[in-house]
Image (cartoon, rainbow, N blue to C red; front, side, top):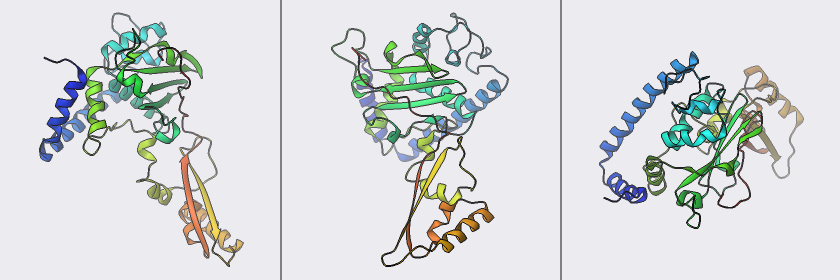
Length: 302
């Protein structure tokens, strides 16, 4: 039997392509129900300071029981303990846990998975923040396929960075963290069947889920007024250009500003009412969104 995960992925892709839509929908619905139940367990345990996976306090550390919650930096956890976590938990399981943790502190803004915020040269670029902890994942195409000229990085892998108080605790070039077979199966099906397979993180949504072409209009319409907030997750830039041969009257702009204040909405949501003008609203991540910690340059086998 061929144990190559990419060969297994090819078989799985063929099966999914030929699966009746009703069966695919049934599997998707079951996955959603399962995730909802798991998330409830996570919240219940996290709320009292325990890990829902191992059942121990989040502050606990024992080399006998490696667990994802070690990434919350309990006393005793060192960077060389990371491989023990990777041996037992896959990339998506680790990422989901950290996403759930981050969203307990505020929806989406502590998870920066926006493609335009990255280098545009990686398969995976993601940064997650919780309190003074920051975790980042990076995977180039050559990492995903494995470095065939390397003795210790031939396997498909990703790079991981962890910072505490903005200081490096684990650096990108410290480890080549192996993908588990189930990770590769999941990634390959998404890469080969993007019209069928989507990677979603229920309850662990990041900025890519919040800010995209499908959501911008709704974000503008539903935005609230108020002064600029350094913790805001969204930033609106409003541009108004007078039609040819006309001017924008200050009185008209003042009326829109006053209407926005009275209704408790943003000027951006009403700017389209400005007479004799073409308007445009640009929505970008706000100052409260964690910045992606990009992996730049390249060292040997990195």
